[in-house]
Image (tube, rainbow, N blue to C red; front, side, top):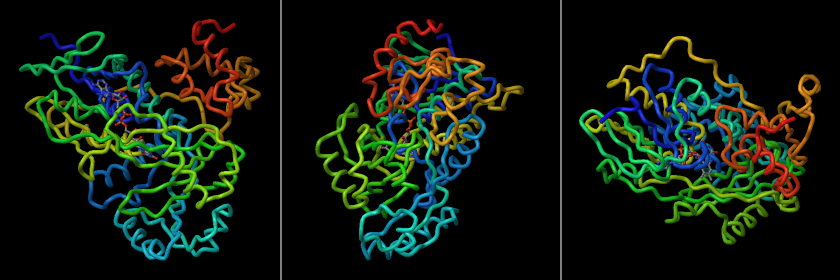
Length: 459
Ligand SMILES: Cc1cc2nc3c(=O)[nH]c(=O)nc-3n(C[C@H](O)[C@H](O)[C@H](O)COP(=O)(O)OP(=O)(O)OC[C@H]3O[C@@H](n4cnc5c(N)ncnc54)[C@H](O)[C@@H]3O)c2cc1C
């Protein structure tokens, strides 16, 4: 069997892209294989986009360690690449006596996780910080380090960085079969087989199926749907920080958070399903969120809804990540990255690198390219339409196409000319924010569709 690559990473979500980027920095040949036509089109595109400190993780778990480490790593990487981050902080609000009594224990848990920034506050201070909260808040716990970011830019930056480092990105290649040979593994893929000496499984919701193709039967992924509301930008002053519920046995609960794009988000639900493709919202889920929202922040429900969406967490039947090396088959499983993978992705890659380093030479190559400089999608930073010098130098940044989100022709052009251009209009949305606003593409959709048909045609 001829070997195309030293390592194939299956799945180009945040986790797979981070692993491919790390391996791409060595002298190994690396493929990043993705079933869909674009990177970041699975769970990594539909989450709550919070950069977690890991204050509430279960102390001593691999997840607790990698979330804390990932928080620091992604924070640094964001500064280097321009991934937007807003250090809003979070406030856990207690609405019952029982919840109030839990807060000191939560602070203790945070400290056991190495996070010492939490403070207990009285109810009047809770309302001073978030005046729009509904009546009945009894007290709170601050988590000043919790931050908001852009999951789309993060995934894309990691994947572009990987490609710039020499990783071969293969999109539209679902792996459907595995044949492990003495020296290499053949992956049967739609669009052409790939052989590699080692395989890393970062297939998210599909990780158990791929694991099964390697002969294992050790876990099952249960898609846990999280539905969310996105409210109009006029609602943004109502949510100066992330408002978290006190977690219970039933889960983390419903939060209210500002988004990096200037909106406010309410959600997510947590519902175990069987269908791994059920990323639509449901009447029941949205009704539940409206009921919760009415209690948490009644004023928010008077604002207009911009969009609803849902994401599927890859939940497994254990309370930690499942990362394991099968040296016999030259295979690494990276499974159960349920609800913290955006934050932990880079640390997961580092951890996988540590495990693989026992079998492979992962010495970094000298003279790696600089990390990519990503377009700013954050509302708090300067966007091209606001940048007079940039418009002077290139008038395309002064020609707005999407008026809701103020996206210019220059940004659309840049997206199509980038190392990983969008495969469809949804991919364009994740790269530019076009069609992400109030009208959801009603006004700009046709123009963007025309541009996507002839992306080279920018006069
Ligand atoms: C509602 C919700 C809220 C969340 N909030 C947060 C948050 O605030 N902060 C945070 O840190 N995390 C959050 N998360 C978790 C985070 O989004 C995930 O942990 C992370 O996106 C997982 O990334 P991944 O790369 O493992 O999976 P994915 O992004 O799903 O990537 C896996 C990829 O593998 C591909 N694939 C699958 N099977 C195959 C195959 N056979 N062949 C080829 N390719 C294949 C898929 O197409 C997919 O693109 C949230 C998740 C949800 C659902």
